[in-house]
Image (cartoon, rainbow, N blue to C red):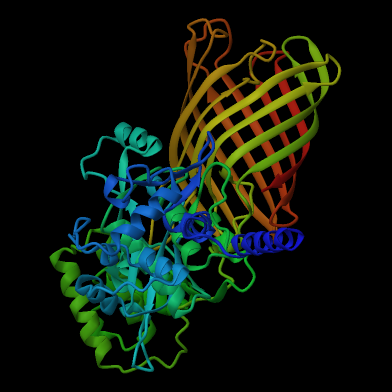
Length: 635
């Protein structure tokens, strides 16, 4: 009996060991369904209420009815479908062909013995791309178009070429954008874009077409970040794009799940150890470049393509005075191209006419067409230029996005204000400000469009040390400003727009709040290469609030100012405004505002500012003065 008992115990231990030493097929499948790669492949994210939710919309992407929120059931259903003779998706393909990356992952992870299906459409697509590696491309902001003020990112699929001198312009670009009707109403555009009302759509175009669109048509700089992806990782990315594009779609959200975010999600599929999509609130294209740059070894090479405008303006500034005169005579039809043998002048005229053509949507008038032909014919007789081709510019160009300051800002300030409305009052205060985005006129312009501002939204709280009062000093909704120098070859107007709730400094009421809106335009003159700008703007300002007799006031404003880089990373702004307060019978109409603001960028994340302002009314005993130091942290 004792021997039998011992044998039973030993047999039991053996059985238990065998059970714990190997996983059942169900357990193995459940473990694989929780793997980070499977979650990324189906684009799952943690739900607010717990569990998972895929960002992909549309039932054809999921084999299980519960697949959108259940990774395990979706893996079970996918595994079953891979051996069935069925057609799925928009292209009516076998499951192995419609979801090739899923199939590869499951076959390798579970060591499946299933027979591979011939996928002619997929193979044709892959042969067309012939992928070798991936480049992340950033096109800079386009300040003259509010819809492009943040820039854009897309992927270039670098093909494997048998030609040693392969031209990257012959590669393919994969872009992701919202499907928007050409005649879409502006308000509907904003509402639908913020609420996910548009479908996201992938487009595949030759890279030269994308470069022509951004560099030539819109005069935007292009930065190319060659990523450290090998051939197999590149194939994983492309196969996952194929799975989404041929079977379903994403909803497009302007602020977060936008062009940049979804591309990062596909890069996470290619590189499972990269964490790229953990943004707290919004995703801006330039910030995605920083995200990738922050990963050690992620970027192999950086290449810069300056815009047509930047090349044209830069080459024009290099010309001697006599060459500039010759250039001006040609475009004024005072001199024919046949009379000019200077290669640099003819090249500049050619670039200028091409720039004019792009601005006119590829339509020159008959005189311009004739002149363009004459220039090209004359230039063809003169051979190559002796000067080294520097059209690719300098890698330290100021538009490089990964060097830019971060966009969130937390600021702490200490200062003093002096009021006389009509009684004299001096108080020390402390401010705390939080701003979501993006870039203002006092920020370092490195990585941004020089002398431009895109700010939204921000809140400033002010605490008065003497009266122990905490107040809203400012609720900033949106500010847009583009100060463009009026140059010989390009004369863009400057403009500004502000929408905020603030405390007017010219009123006798103590810390009253009004709704403020202004819109204006004018001109600017630049000095040096973005070293200084002087501007003059005519502005229409409207304010509304209970502090006014009519509950509103209308203020025409003439604003003059300058922004100067005294040295690298140190900016100073001088600004004066002359305002007319119309329709207010109880007070004189005119008052003046003066500002002296200085900023010093200590690094990509830290900045110091000293800001002063004065508001002087034509009324007696009515003035306001303020000065404060600020320390800003960008993250």
